[in-house]
Length: 286
Length: 273
Image (cartoon, rainbow over all chains, first blue to last red):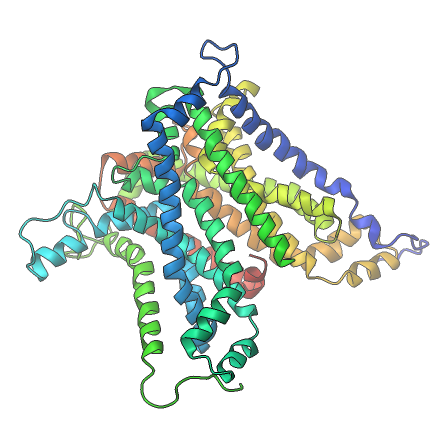
């Protein structure tokens, strides 16, 4: 290494991070992410002939009973998946933080490992479990002899819900665990010393203190569930959601204006979730 | 550790129930994945579980179906390309954003991470029209651009996470000793944040490789990615080839994770992720 005897510059580290460094990334996203989404929103207001302004698609989406049901089903499905994820995820997060001891590493590994599998693989896994000659039918028919004819599960939305929870619950567990970890154990001990039983301590101390984790996880899960598509295409069970409708409009109906309007509604829900998420993070001062 | 406050005598049924619940949870988490791995080694000609015997024929079958092979190559090219592009524009942005405390910088950070929160099917649908208007349309470049949109946040989040945790003293020392900013970056900053870049690149690669809702809109004989071909295959057939392909993908992901872990340590990754 050669040593150069130049006079040290008077401005040290400040030179390393001028704001100009963010320009390529910001410009890239403005051009290829923001503009297409805005253009898509605009298209949803353009009349079917290619000119003029129309609200007809939104009127249809918000008044027609079929489309209203699709929007409601999208939101209800996401909400349902979120609630189930909280109910399943909270005990697991609690165990991970408070009871797992030397098993913590294994539990974190088992939570993260499914994230390495493709969404197609997990969907296929549910199909294998509930196929006509899958594990569940084989157990029911051959092993246990409970039924004579294999059940057909292809029209059960419950499997789609289970598959979505399977994909999303790790995010919930990790969000809740992060917050549980930061709770000062002395608060729980104080409650117990003051005579509260373990359930009362949990209900009045631990649970309220971990609400932020539940909130963060809930928004995350709701947001991803809302845009989920692969799971529902393959395991839909007759559910009709906005992402599925966009897929169908693009594939078969080819009504791009309508697909744009539905995309925009989905986008508005996503932006609202993002806004809530930011408020939550800010309140926590993170 | 000061008093855990457990019952002490006898069996603590609440803890037993909690433990049982966690075991059941992991059976739920692992079952759909393990059955696919098992089915990929089946000797049966159809999907059944438990399997009647073992064979490797479905792995051989992957390579007999030409669209899978073509799509695998496209997927690898897109995933590598989008990851490299994300690093090229994402890492410089981190250098500024991770150290700045201004409100403007945190707003910029939120903006750069926002593609993660948007429904991918909307990004795909909107991009198709915009890119067609630009004349890029259904092409490899379109895949590269749209995948970079969703890969960029992963690179930025992990790289910025690692960089924010570093004391600025190293860079200041180098600068005071006369290194110009480029040399400081190359010899000091880059080696220090490499774990973050590597972890972000791994997530970015896996995200791109697994992406279906965006790739779907840019599908053609030349630009079908692996998930797109797998989906159309699954819509028509239900045989163990998909299981074999999934298992292969899982092995790839685990190997990639182990390599990154061996070189950089897994805890460094999860801190930022």
